[in-house]
Length: 228
Image 1 (cartoon, rainbow, N blue to C red):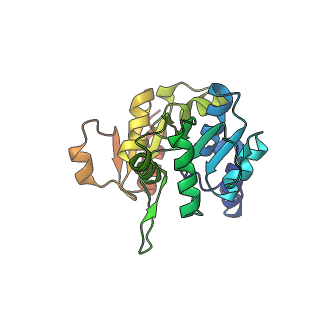
Image 2: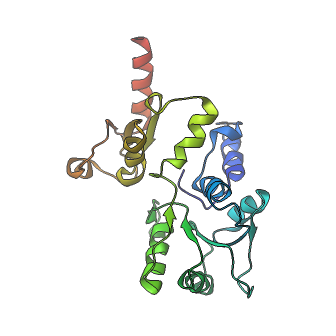
């Protein structure tokens, strides 16, 4: 998932409470992708100014990265923007300050909003990065999460799969389906979230499969197994 407001362990706990999964390897978030990226590409970065929730901060700390406090005077090694449901004006301004000064800067994912059925707009990481860009004139050095291929690299390696053996199922054309096409996986769009059929018609790189909901996708999987 691109939703980095919760750690992978928190997501797993939620799934376990619903009897869905008890395997940590089945959960992969854009937060974990950011941690993997920092360890691989910026191994010297230890002090992180994180626009993220307490849950994500704990996950960074558990992986050897120290989230710095908003009032620390010394520059951080990197600024990481995520989906921060606890974001404050002061926290945002401090991030813009470090970005303006040239600190390495990454974003966990590009999503502009988080879907909700509540009467509100959940401002997501991409919108926060747009705000910082307007204030500083600078975009993130890299934007991880879907559609960045790094989101699938760890999953493919863990399960010993090739991209063509994987189906990417999601509700967004510019993240889920774009990533599927980028790595050569099957892109399946579910019409229960952001994208609708009119968006599919206007898409330059359409999904390989469009289903109304996950129930329909499940039925198609069952039917396909019968033909094997």
